[in-house]
Figure 1 (cartoon, rainbow, N blue to C red):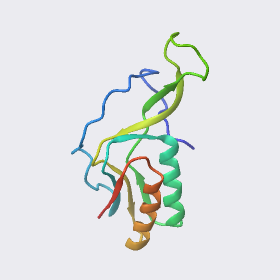
Figure 2 (cartoon, rainbow, N blue to C red):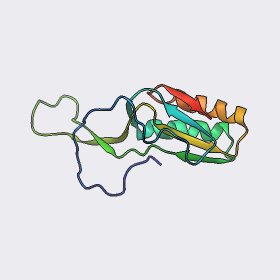
Figure 3 (cartoon, rainbow, N blue to C red):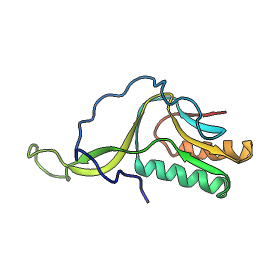
Figure 4 (cartoon, rainbow, N blue to C red):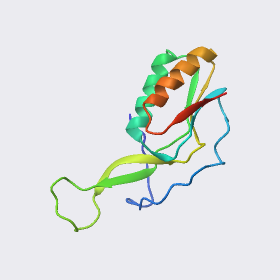
Amino acid sequence: MLLQPKKTKYRKIQKGKLAKFNFRSNKLKFGTIGLKATKSGTISSRQIEAARQAIVRKISRKGKLWIRAFPSVPITAKPTEVRMGKGKGAVSHWSVKVNAGAILFEIYGIAQNVAIAALKTGGAKLPVNTIILF
Protein backbone atom coordinates (compact mmCIF):
# COMPACT_ATOMS: atom_id res chain seq x y z
CA MET A 1 0.00 0.00 0.00
CA LEU A 2 1.59 3.23 -1.15
CA LEU A 3 1.39 6.35 0.99
CA GLN A 4 -0.81 9.21 -0.21
CA PRO A 5 -3.14 11.73 1.45
CA LYS A 6 -6.80 10.85 1.95
CA LYS A 7 -7.96 14.39 1.13
CA THR A 8 -6.21 17.39 -0.40
CA LYS A 9 -7.21 21.03 -0.58
CA TYR A 10 -5.69 21.51 -4.04
CA ARG A 11 -5.36 18.78 -6.64
CA LYS A 12 -2.17 20.11 -8.29
CA ILE A 13 0.56 22.33 -6.88
CA GLN A 14 3.70 23.99 -8.20
CA LYS A 15 7.08 22.40 -7.56
CA GLY A 16 8.77 25.13 -5.50
CA LYS A 17 12.33 25.08 -4.16
CA LEU A 18 14.10 23.09 -1.46
CA ALA A 19 16.00 24.60 1.45
CA LYS A 20 19.64 23.65 2.04
CA PHE A 21 19.28 22.49 5.64
CA ASN A 22 16.33 21.88 7.96
CA PHE A 23 16.64 22.32 11.70
CA ARG A 24 13.04 21.38 12.54
CA SER A 25 13.06 17.58 12.30
CA ASN A 26 16.71 16.70 12.80
CA LYS A 27 16.41 14.97 16.21
CA LEU A 28 15.15 11.50 17.10
CA LYS A 29 11.67 11.71 18.64
CA PHE A 30 10.37 8.14 18.79
CA GLY A 31 13.14 5.57 18.30
CA THR A 32 16.70 5.01 19.49
CA ILE A 33 18.34 4.82 16.06
CA GLY A 34 17.34 6.65 12.89
CA LEU A 35 18.07 7.36 9.23
CA LYS A 36 18.86 11.01 8.43
CA ALA A 37 19.05 12.68 5.00
CA THR A 38 22.29 14.56 4.34
CA LYS A 39 21.18 16.08 1.02
CA SER A 40 17.94 17.72 -0.07
CA GLY A 41 15.70 16.03 -2.62
CA THR A 42 12.30 14.60 -3.44
CA ILE A 43 11.38 11.06 -2.45
CA SER A 44 8.41 9.31 -4.07
CA SER A 45 5.95 7.15 -2.16
CA ARG A 46 7.24 4.09 -4.03
CA GLN A 47 10.79 4.74 -2.81
CA ILE A 48 9.60 5.18 0.79
CA GLU A 49 7.67 1.92 0.54
CA ALA A 50 10.68 0.08 -0.95
CA ALA A 51 12.90 1.34 1.89
CA ARG A 52 10.28 0.40 4.48
CA GLN A 53 9.98 -3.14 3.09
CA ALA A 54 13.77 -3.59 3.07
CA ILE A 55 14.08 -2.38 6.67
CA VAL A 56 11.18 -4.55 7.90
CA ARG A 57 12.65 -7.64 6.22
CA LYS A 58 16.05 -7.05 7.85
CA ILE A 59 14.62 -6.58 11.35
CA SER A 60 12.36 -9.61 10.73
CA ARG A 61 9.25 -7.71 11.90
CA LYS A 62 10.48 -7.22 15.46
CA GLY A 63 10.63 -3.89 17.26
CA LYS A 64 8.90 -0.74 16.03
CA LEU A 65 9.52 1.32 12.88
CA TRP A 66 8.41 4.93 12.39
CA ILE A 67 8.24 6.61 8.98
CA ARG A 68 8.83 10.34 9.54
CA ALA A 69 8.40 11.44 5.88
CA PHE A 70 4.89 11.51 4.41
CA PRO A 71 4.40 12.05 0.65
CA SER A 72 1.89 14.89 0.36
CA VAL A 73 3.15 16.66 -2.79
CA PRO A 74 1.37 15.64 -6.02
CA ILE A 75 3.67 15.17 -9.03
CA THR A 76 1.99 15.61 -12.39
CA ALA A 77 2.98 14.20 -15.76
CA LYS A 78 1.58 14.54 -19.25
CA PRO A 79 1.31 11.42 -21.42
CA THR A 80 4.11 10.69 -23.87
CA GLU A 81 3.85 12.09 -27.41
CA VAL A 82 1.46 14.88 -26.38
CA ARG A 83 1.98 18.34 -27.83
CA MET A 84 2.95 21.33 -25.68
CA GLY A 85 0.25 23.38 -24.01
CA LYS A 86 -3.31 22.33 -23.10
CA GLY A 87 -2.71 22.68 -19.35
CA LYS A 88 -0.95 20.78 -16.63
CA GLY A 89 -0.91 16.98 -16.70
CA ALA A 90 -2.74 14.60 -14.38
CA VAL A 91 -1.31 13.55 -11.01
CA SER A 92 1.02 10.62 -11.64
CA HIS A 93 2.40 9.98 -8.13
CA TRP A 94 2.95 11.51 -4.69
CA SER A 95 6.26 12.59 -3.20
CA VAL A 96 7.78 14.38 -0.23
CA LYS A 97 10.32 17.21 -0.33
CA VAL A 98 13.10 16.30 2.09
CA ASN A 99 15.53 18.94 3.33
CA ALA A 100 19.05 18.02 4.38
CA GLY A 101 19.06 17.02 8.03
CA ALA A 102 15.53 15.56 8.12
CA ILE A 103 14.93 12.24 9.88
CA LEU A 104 13.30 9.71 7.53
CA PHE A 105 13.00 6.50 9.57
CA GLU A 106 13.34 5.59 13.26
CA ILE A 107 13.66 2.16 14.88
CA TYR A 108 13.15 1.04 18.49
CA GLY A 109 13.51 -2.34 20.21
CA ILE A 110 16.15 -3.91 17.93
CA ALA A 111 19.81 -4.78 18.59
CA GLN A 112 22.07 -1.97 17.37
CA ASN A 113 24.02 -4.01 14.79
CA VAL A 114 20.79 -5.38 13.26
CA ALA A 115 19.27 -1.88 13.17
CA ILE A 116 22.37 -0.43 11.47
CA ALA A 117 22.29 -3.15 8.80
CA ALA A 118 18.55 -2.61 8.25
CA LEU A 119 18.87 1.16 7.90
CA LYS A 120 21.81 0.79 5.50
CA THR A 121 19.73 -1.37 3.16
CA GLY A 122 16.78 0.98 3.51
CA GLY A 123 18.96 4.02 2.78
CA ALA A 124 20.23 2.35 -0.39
CA LYS A 125 16.68 2.42 -1.78
CA LEU A 126 16.38 6.21 -1.39
CA PRO A 127 17.52 8.87 -3.91
CA VAL A 128 19.09 11.10 -1.21
CA ASN A 129 22.31 10.53 0.71
CA THR A 130 21.68 9.30 4.25
CA ILE A 131 23.54 8.66 7.50
CA ILE A 132 22.60 6.59 10.54
CA LEU A 133 21.88 8.57 13.70
CA PHE A 134 22.16 7.21 17.27
